[in-house]
Length: 198
Image (cartoon, rainbow, N blue to C red; front, side, top):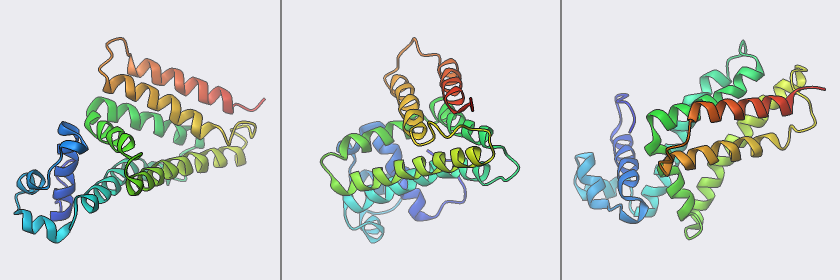
């Protein structure tokens, strides 16, 4: 699911877990298969993760770090203006849809299972809270720089996430009438218009 970065055994296990969830969902993921795909014994897998819940919680954190990894460098770049930083969130979702839709399927599966697993719910909420905080930080930078209006600053992260998730869902469902680039361009327009100072 990710490029080989000289992965540690733990990362190899977590990548294998995400790949299996993408194929078989959480309900079809077995520790035995995770061990086999990771090239280790099941006993060795239990050395890293005693229970399936431990494995799933670590997989959510790993998934979240993959999303953060993709945007962190650009968001921390002081030379990049806030309006361009805001576009990074949209660009990242487009890239994920086009090249890593499986990661988005896994994210959705974790969301769907969060209603019955409180620990998963907590981890998923943390992932979305971090996304919200990053968007809020960029909008605050834009307000302070006079690029964005204050009026909708608080609502924009939620509006942006809802619009992006709608397009992601259509792609996961394999909808044929979705022009991802065009939809995200419209979202970009809507968000920039809402933030435009009067």
